Amino acid sequence: MSHSSDLNHRRKNAPSGLLDWLYTDIAIDLGTANTLIYAKGQGIVLNEPSIVALNSQNQAVAVGHEARLMHEKTHKDIRTVRPLRDGVIADFEVAELMIRGMIKKVKLKWFSSTRKMVVCVPSGITEVEKRAVRDSAERAGAKDVYLVDEPMAAAIGIGLNVHEPVGNMIVDIGGGTTEIAVIALSGIVYSQSVRLGGDELNEDIINYFRRNHNLLIGERTAEQVKCMIGSAAPLDEEIEIQTKGRDLVNGVPRIRTVSSVEVREAIAESVNTIIESVNQSLEQTPPELSADILDRGIMLTGGGALLKNLDKLIRDTTDLPVHIAEDPLTAVVRGTGEVLENLNYYRSVIS
Image 1 (cartoon, rainbow, N blue to C red):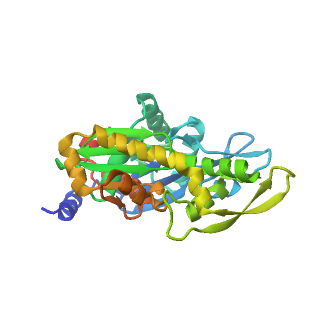
Image 2: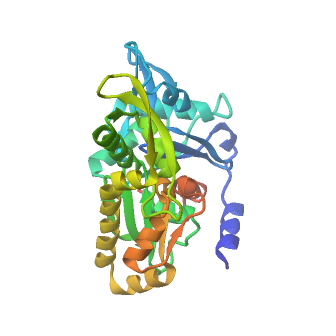
Image 3: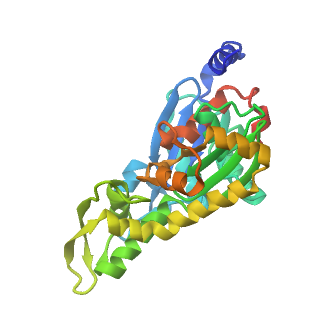
């Protein structure tokens, strides 16, 4: 039976309870930069920044896109908080407010409640951090909470059959962490969780502008610069853009021209750390699985996979085929959603 017909067979034969219409079961990719929600039977229903705007009484006044628009533009009575750092919850109360707010945005029936929730977590997190995720999900209203490792979710999301006795290497580069894992037989054979991702690259760009241009730029501007002209290896045609910020010498707003060469120099150290971690993971992989990776290549997922020429740099460094997943930003939530749709089939990959 092929993978797709196997999937259809499982879906057709999934038991449907009489009271299912009362519930909205969901899967969440709780990311440092973005939170994505998948609703059972409906697909991805939300993709918003992981940020909350709080008033002076610590009540949430905005969540997601609305809070992001306020970020770095607030007054003394409103502050914006990103409750996740390095892929894990750094502020439990705000994380709970954020999860509640996000769920409220996707409540399709006003009377429905969340029965099952599948949340993906970085593979390197501690039991204490797992407990924190579980508690936050339960306090936000979920009756049953299941956790799945991010690289496993990414592998399922890009259509790999994780139950096979075949090695697959996933490199998932998110906002706060880079997850590198070799997967076979429904388990993670080797994994490495590097607490470095897209946010670190933004920080590198901010520091570069401060040092080399005496210009102070915000996080959102750094993100735009990275997405527009950031690259891991030289481009066929280098690009220049104009960037606005505050001059550190006289304190007035200024415009500076910045090139893709400069941005590449700014993020080089962090990119090299990711490349070194991929090489270390390959060195730790059992030989039989290394042979599979040689045939199948390395799969890149997560927002960081979109950094220009990153696949080329990894290919040149490892001499292995490197593939960028289709729509890498949603690979993890698609996989988490797949687990939610077929909990029994994926029982061995959840905790």
